[in-house]
Image (cartoon, rainbow, N blue to C red):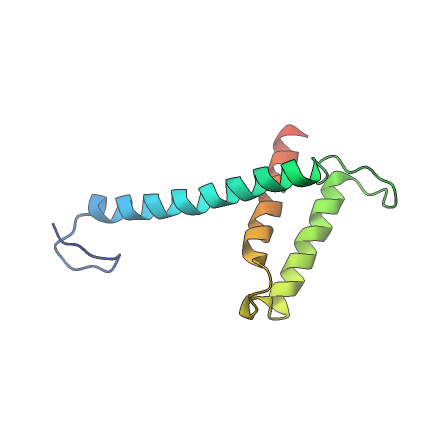
Length: 104
């Protein structure tokens, strides 16, 4: 079998290309999982259970605001800066939004 990096060489089978893709997906998702668990340990469950000292927004509304903030940073060129991994944060907030939707 060929040893391609995703481009069609005519030798590889579909299963040859799926396996490296599957590994890449798992590596990225593992890093997001570790980030979310670490931040939850560090900050408590503040995204899903805010303490509400200053803001009285629901956890869902709080997540939506954080997602909007990350999208604005991307729109304003944050992807070109190395100061923060805004994409990982955005993915993390989207995962938290899914958790909130599924488990309340």
